[in-house]
Amino acid sequence: MSSFERPSWRPRSSTIEPLTNVIVEMEEVIVTADIPCADTSRIRVTFLDERTLEITAQLRKKFRFEDFNISHRRGEFSRYHAMVTIPVPIEKRIALKCQRSILEIRLPRKLGS
Image (cartoon, rainbow, N blue to C red; front, side, top):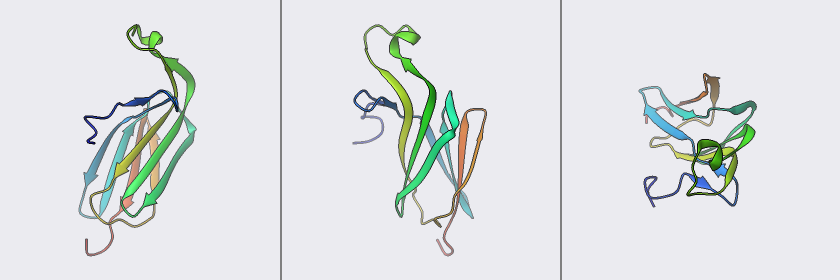
């Protein structure tokens, strides 16, 4: 299922998927995630395999759809969760920076890739 076909929030786990972007450069891959209202001390980025990153971030407070005047849905979310596929081989080293609610993850590319 493509990212356009799956829901961006999961009621059972109270998570919402942040907007993400993958930029492939000559020497590194840069992944960005839009995580407004996230607790920057509770961000976690882990490698699930050679080409997949998992991003989780706890929100500072729970949000309900009603908070945004959405009446046709019920539910709340308290954290972000995203699985990001990296299209080229990378080293398993991560440099993180979070500024103005944008998480930036820099991953060096493997030599020769």
